Length: 82
Length: 547
Image 1 (cartoon, each protein chain N blue to C red):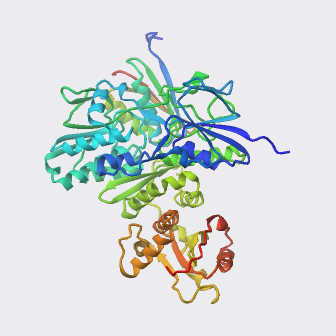
Image 2 (spheres, rainbow over the protein chains, first blue to last red):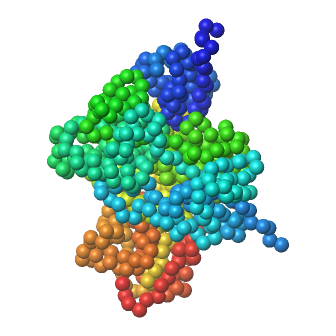
Image 3 (tube, rainbow over the protein chains, first blue to last red):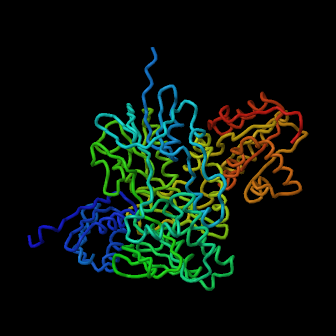
């Protein structure tokens, strides 16, 4: 992997939480993240997709991917600014 | 031979801990509550201390709120060893248990944000103590205009409606003081919208815009500079202030756990969202704000979770659904409720005067509800206000406001006799028409023909019941009578008022004696096939005088 050894890949499981559960979990994870970290957010609330896209645009972080896996939505974010 | 009572140790004497202790039967359990403070504070009152100059009756002595069989221990808990089933107080006193329930709540932690400690000490807040709320009240009173900024300084907030309530009440008071025109109101939030839950945002955001309150979304506080009076977000945006009303971050109790990993990074207890068991621990539960449950940190949450754990401890099936039902005061005598579950998204519910009245009513009945006396009424209330389950996908189409006519289509006619006192039997009917029919079907000998039958319904009924006692004439007669009847305990009045606000019909039947009351109550029950807590609520006080 090209990532520096000090960055982390954090999986945040917000499955089963209704709005605003996933965005709360993301905001909390972001507070503890640093540049280069990856946050992988798992959710079932469909609102997570527009909310995280808007969040990433506002915070100038990068949405690496949004995947629908069965009933789960997996959003992978790379922290570029913190 | 009787089984020895199981030792239940409840850590924390807030809403959840107190309700749970009172809900456990002394026949099966030996209940101990450990609380750091001898005083029990009604936390929602802090909002009104800060913005409405209220201050009476915020706190009561915890010892008086617990049923007699509950043992109360004062002391700070230092360690909880879930493996050895052992708790140590700060003074070293050990406590053992068979099963433990953690209900330790959360406290404000301004030290997490650079600069916030100083701002918090100077300006106060409405989420920690009455002293802090009074400090904020005084600073607000001194404020003569400029920029007032209000918001939560971290994503987790005790009572999620409280930030919006704060800014709306501030707006109302500034208008009243005639200085709104020279005040810029700024509301910030770390969320993508003014209210974190999308359904309720459809109500809140237009309201804020209508009141000319600026909304700054995605504003997650990084630091505050008290010298330049500037709040800076993680993204580097800034807001200047003259009066900062900042809700501090929250943190769980400072208790050392074994195993340590039952706490998450914010010291919230990792709790199974349905069973409320502490993850990875046997014989241990957590309720209320102390948990990491993905639901609102609120009194109503603690209330419902306490009931779930009471059932679970008693060996009955019990599951927490994530239910919330948080009142939101929108100012100007109106309010609404934020209602949802883990799976039912928060519904859009328009503010109304009745809902505001209900918030106030809940405040009045709080101390009674801790004792569990109102539980039959509250259970029914929560059932009737259950939010509709979302069809998948969960949030694509927020459900419309619940149809107020809905309950009339359901075969629930008779709820329960709420009170029988001073030769009058009170009954509540969800279906007003059925209620009138049921009363009409009573035999001629059932009622005292020399006195009138009271049929209370809707706004008119609320006016007649008027808890504030402002009614006059024929209504005043009713009100005064009710107040006299219930002067020793206002729970009946509050319960009846709550039922009226809920759209139910309240009937007050003039009855001559206890035997007739028994028979009439039985007839009303037979008419619908529903059971009700008759004897539990019966308090028939014979009196010589007429009301």
